[in-house]
Length: 98
Image (cartoon, rainbow, N blue to C red):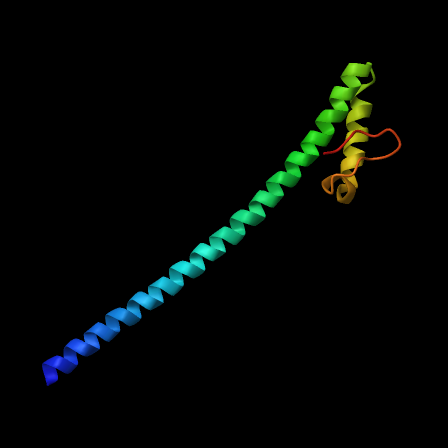
């Protein structure tokens, strides 16, 4: 009877250990996925900003305008990040954001 009870307790402890480790790994996996998603958002936002500035510089190169002024215009369009990241086109002849 004692050996049977001992075996049952050991099995229960092993099962409990497996459940605890499963919970820990699931939590870590979810945390990693959330951080990765946030990181991707940040990278995409930066890419949109660089694209906006690059388009302004390309437009200046094609039209023969001052690239520094175009860069400032593109940067100015980006500083109103809300419209640029939302994909809106800046008005007043600014560079086209994504």
